[in-house]
Amino acid sequence: MKERNHAFDFLCGICIIRMITLHTITFCGHQNDAWWKEVMAWSFFFMCFFFFKAGYFNKTVSGNSKEYIKDKAKRLLTPYVTWGTIGFLVYCFYLPFEIDRYHNPIEPMSWDHLWRTSSFWGNEPVWFLCSFFSAYVLVHFMKKIQIVKPISVFQTVVLATFPFISYWLWKNDNPIWLSLNNVFMGAFFFYLGRGWRFFIDHIERKYILMLSCVFIVAFIISNFVWHGEYIMSANKFEGDPFAAFVNTIIILLGLSGFLLKLPLKRVPVINYIGQHSMVYFVCHYPILQFYRFTHICFGRSIYGRWDDFIILLVFVFCICTWLVPYVEGNPYLSGRFKKSPQTPKGEATGTEVKKLEEAVKPIEAVNSAQSNE
Image (cartoon, rainbow, N blue to C red; front, side, top):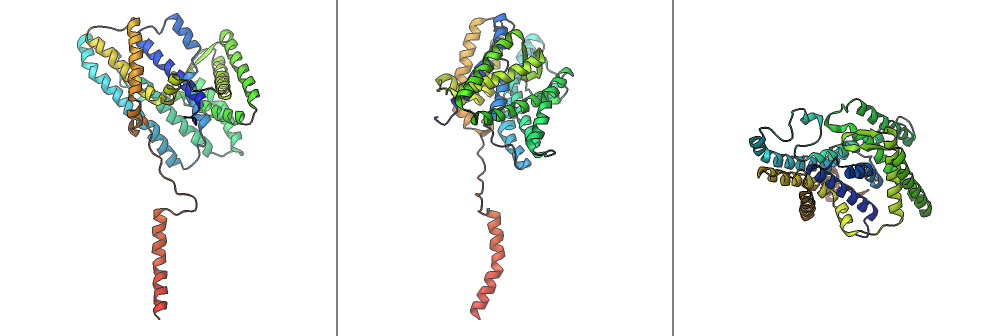
């Protein structure tokens, strides 16, 4: 536990709490309330943080492309498909009851959903895992292409275009299939995290704290007078697009730098949620669907009811917490596959040893014959 980064666990925990609260609020029909819109206006950057965090802790995106993509696919696309299917099965289980009561699904279904979005009916938030995987693949091939040396110069030039590409895609109704229009911004925030890690590791603590405070204050002032929001899930810019871009950058740098250099002690509940954020992320939506549709089957809607909002919020966090050891213990649910043991440098693999033994046999036979003579 002492080796964990409590600052990022804390931020992850806050992000997950905000996300589950958002979805619960939406299910209960209060997403358009003025007070909640205000919360969203000050926390719009939280999904971008996960890409930023991945870049901050990432050691390398190089290596053999086939093995790299295979590893990322196992760890991200496997739980994506698994939990997407679980959510879809929950949704399909209740579908006959919906049609029987309302003569059509509550959430209209269409065939273009299969290729237009990376969401699953019944577990929409899993889009993140598909976009996360795609962002990893994108930064990997950016590392592979060495048109200009040093490579950092080329990457900087390409990365500078990504926000503009993302904005252009939004202005053209996000044409890329599987909702992957947000991948360019994801890659940008990934490298922002890597660059920030390099920067704060080479600057004194007091200067990082001062700079982080300046960023946080700048974000607070800017969010009042120059407001803009970037919605990662939909690759959507609200308000001033440039303000959304700038404000997201300064708050990610400011919050992370400030909490990293305090340093922050472990906050029991929030850090636990952040530490096991994957479980809460993939599990919560099917649980929300189960609660909502069960009530609908008995002719009772939770829409507009604050009592159900409180009960549902407690219900979801309790069930997800209970599921943590079971989900993390199954790699197909969590993506926690064991890494293949690598051969230490200078040692031969099993195949190489076998080849050496076969090559030595004729030499041994000759030596044996000479000895007999």
